[in-house]
Image (tube, rainbow, N blue to C red; front, side, top):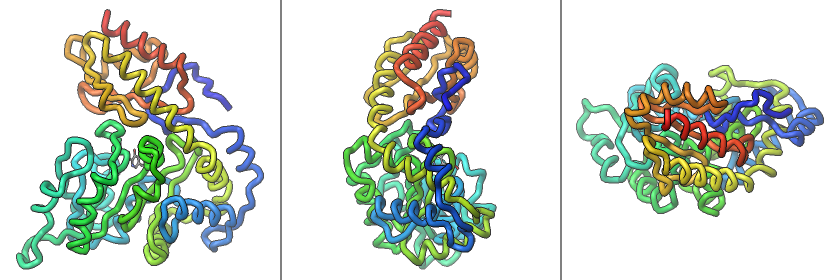
Amino acid sequence: MQNVSGLSDFRSDTVTLPTPAMRRAMADADVGDDVYGEDPTVRRLEERTAELLGLAAALFVPTGSMGNQIALRVQGRPGTEVLLDHRCHVFHFEMAGMATLSGLLPRPVASPKGVPTVEALRPWIRPEEIYYLPRTSMITLENTHNLAGGTVARRADLEPVLALAASRSIPVHLDGARLWNASAALGVPESVLASGFSSVMVCFSKGLRAPVGSAVAGSEAFVAEARRVRKLFGGGMRQAGVLAAAALVALEHERARLTEDHARARRLAAELAGIAGLSVDPASVETNMVMVTVDGRLGDAGTVLAHLKGKGVLAGSMGPDLIRLVTHADVGEADVARCVEAFRAASAS
Ligand SMILES: Cc1ncc(COP(=O)(O)O)c(C=O)c1O
């Protein structure tokens, strides 16, 4: 099925529709009751995901948010702090889940591009000898980083944080909703970027176009515990193989394509950078996101979004003057041209 709205939808890569190959695989999938561990297609997806990440095991979960929250619940202890970047998804968009579901206190640390430096993190790892301070039980990182603009963390960015955490025996979780994009952008296997993390969450339902599903991966012991927490959170699924089948197609056929989305985002940014009233830094575009700051002359982000919508272009607001555009398989060159024209018209109005 194609996008029948007639709109050019740059709001998110989550709007992508499943491919015909995915729909066929879903229809043909071998299934069983996965709460009893009897769904062969789910098993295959979990094994393939673990293999790609270089980790011992993986667990299929309905959403990325659930995967992150399961990892936090398994590895964090109630009444302790989780160090994380101040703009990360876990902190901003998961509805204080770590507090309500796991009794954890987020300790946000600022970073320019999404990965806090060791210098920024170290003072917040609480000293054990001061007994009335909360303990630090986890660190989470995000790659690519959504609110920082789809930025990529390289091995060299991750290494110092992982080394600091290891020196204090602190587990580090990776929100890798778009780890596939980071891997495609850098030309390195996902396993290289996942190495050293105690748990990794990945999504099949974003740029990879599967309709539903994510996974959380780690050691055998971590996944055994994660399976219990998934049930606790209401995420035990039955004939989930119909969903896993689409995710398997996503893994095998969509990862290589992501570089096209990245190239399209770079072209979009370069075009928008020339439009009066917009501030866009093409050099900052590393994957499939373009962040556009709107100057007051055009009104706020909401005004500009309404204008774009009038021209058939959908985008998202990430702040009072900040618009996010995301490229994906269901926006092509014609959509990019339409988007640029819509911004031009907004600037001229
Ligand atoms: C970086 C990041 N992590 C986690 C998620 C959560 O995924 P889901 O929408 O499947 O809960 C998202 C969703 O956009 C995301 O961008």
